[in-house]
Amino acid sequence: MKRIGLLTSGGDASGMNAAIRAVTRTAASMGMTTIGFQHGYDGLVTNTWTELNARAVSGILELGGTMLKSARSELFRTPEGRRQAALVVQQNQLDGMVIIGGNGSQTGGYLLGQLGIPVVGVASTIDNDLYGFDYTIGFDTAVNVAIDAIDRIRDAAESHDRVFVVEVMGRDNGSIALEAAIATGADIVLTPELPFSIPELITHLRDDVMAQKKHHIIVMAEGAGHAEELARYINANLPVECRATVLGYVQRGGSPTRFDRILASTSGEAAVVALTEGRSSIVAGTRSGHIVLQDTLEAVTRRNLLKPELVELLKRVSI
Image (cartoon, rainbow, N blue to C red; front, side, top):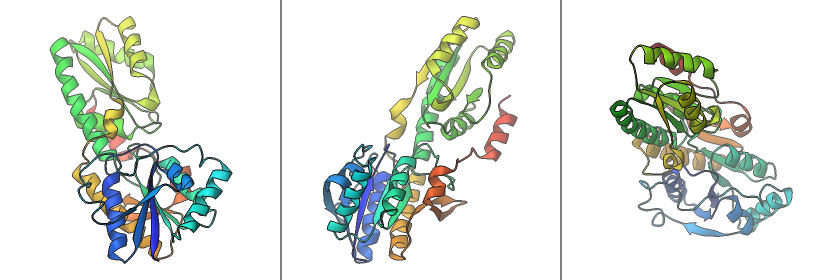
């Protein structure tokens, strides 16, 4: 194996640059050249790339975002686009591809693999929704951003006796909401996985107000509803002042945490090693404190559940 391709795709996640660095430098240490395609699968289809070496990836470990840029490619969604991407791989004499990204990106990698291209993924998404992994690159940083914001919002809630509904990202996975809620001592957490009733929530808040508890923090995963709608409903049904805060894209940026830097580095290295061993249609990530290689199709089609021990902890401490 002499030459590999690399791209980042889908939503950016802090730690992607660290993964790019690890892939490039691991390949270089094994005598291989790495080329990085720009703007995800669009760059692969259009053959837009730059050669990467140890110097090119110097100084990016601590940076958020991705130096290769990212995009969601409409071209690659078509069979013709995927065939063109495979042709580009062959024209550039690449022995394999490393795909850094989340569910959609790894699905793309699987489809590319079906065309005979060796592909190994690196699990990277703040949503933490790839099956088979405890954590994906960017998740820890996103949770820490949410924790910092909720801690600050609590100061305002206590000062003004207000209820705050804080909406966090995660698509249809409630991991960010769950872990941020536990870490900040939020009063209520709403996720797609945990059933809840708005009337019961109102009753719970009303009981707290009657008991003279006048400030609350509600953490809501974006897949569980909309913070602004819930805030309006609370204001209309309770004698409290409720405000909504949607954290949004601030969770995807910023310097990665120690955990994400190390996870990205170890996963990137494992992906390159796996390619040299002839492996394909797998994704590198972490489980039980170790780097594992998960079947790609399983990773993207099976549901990554909330950690049951954290759900149980939430029930015990959120009273």
